[in-house]
Image (cartoon, rainbow over all chains, first blue to last red; front, side):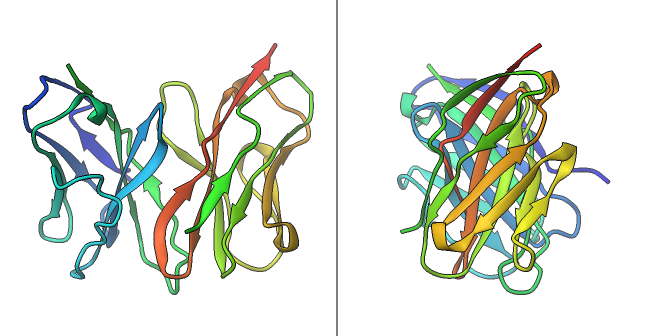
Length: 116
Length: 113
């Protein structure tokens, strides 16, 4: 079946502009995660959605970052007033929540964000 | 807070050599352990995972890993690498109360033909 998809694949923006990144999870997966991958910081967790529960926002680096998940499926990560340090690959993952904490996350191809 | 350490940042091997990549984690509770691989130009893919049971787990493409609880380790092994194994390898952990993955810094493996 189809995997996790993300759009756009590449985004170049100017410092100070807002950007929106989109993630379509695997159909039927109830959990959705955002991570970012950068040279200096490696792979970092940003935010996690589980069903209708309040999201876990503990990884968001600043209040310029926000995300929403509409209808329990598609998610949008928004970065306001982008800074050069926001340049990274933003990865989305989804999982089908099994019992306990034994779900496996499947990753999308990422969106490469470059802030000039 | 939990953390994951991968001590080998860059490994260069010749084809047919054996591979062992180290992974240590710091967390005292119940953990789930993963190895992901990122081939050049491709997205992260799951190699193998450990949730419970036999501490020796086998994954795709001939990879295996052994969970040693007393050493807080989950090392990745392959008896004979191929050029196509050139990639970056990430060890990751989830734990009770934390579904998000905590990743190690990654190991870049370069296999020379």
